[in-house]
Length: 330
Image 1 (cartoon, rainbow, N blue to C red):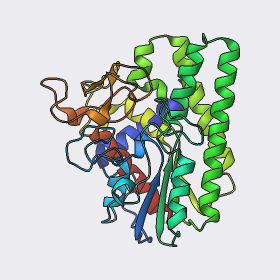
Image 2 (image 1 turned 120 degrees about the horizontal axis):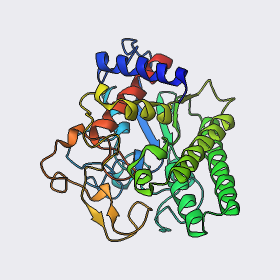
Image 3 (image 1 turned 45 degrees about the horizontal axis):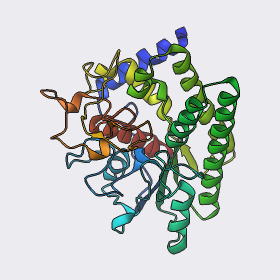
């Protein structure tokens, strides 16, 4: 890790300690008055399309998804499309490829989610569109690479497929802008090498490859939207969660217990099926409630709900960070 990176971590961690949920620079008042929040993506943004108590976090009845936190900062809400709302993101959704990360063909891809929205809706100047992707594509491609023996050829194929997925996501962002979106908040993938899933892999060489894969995805995504700066705001989940995982105690109420040096999911809701795409009999936070947690712990201090997705406090922190970026921009 470079000296510059360490200095950035120290600076931002200090900022978080002072500002807590507000974040640095959050005193800037937004000139934008959104009337609707619309979301597309995967489990990270899913507000309950399997059911209101089936978000990929601890389902505790709170505002426990970053998209909801962002909308709430403007006095608005976002409900799942399955119940008539504008939250189209679905767990395990890939960007254009089917089946999803867990092998289901029923899950709408990000592209299909946008198809469904545009078939019956028109984008308005005061809409804020939230779109994320990458986690499910990387998980699916990673599992395929491992199944193929993690050979050099399999790694190259994974890299090519992940890069194409990033370009495909960029194309969908362009599509939204062409359809009239003027305020698009784009989120790539966080660095999956900091996840409990990566910790369970436990092989430095493979963990390094996983980190490079997520960096490649985000770089390809950014290159694909480089000309869309007037209408698109990129909120860097990889940078943000690298900072948080480096110094979780600086981001109240997160603490060091259950976070690092070895991250631990707070949920115990094991899914006997394919779950979140990393294999059978793994913790799946879409099944997690306050009754399926590690005994005797304060789940509000945990970063991860399951091996891939974040617990409520981390979701709210990222949502507040996104609000800060959005309110400074528009």
